[in-house]
View (cartoon, one colour):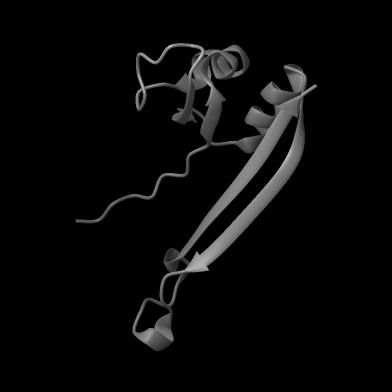
Length: 99
């Protein structure tokens, strides 16, 4: 079976704060019924554009504190793997804080 790789913007942090910042654009289906004072790393946003997330965070008084990115290759053509971009996976993490 072939699976479609879906790019998602994951949200982790205190649930009440995530709901305050992202409102209805926060998809809570992966971690429902959690108390607002708890933390989660299982929510994601219903849109796929980072600019929208950054705008919402900025409007709520947050600033970017750190950023980290990785790009890894599972196996390349020299090991018998495919020779296209589908073998690459990437992960970028942005850390925001509010004073």
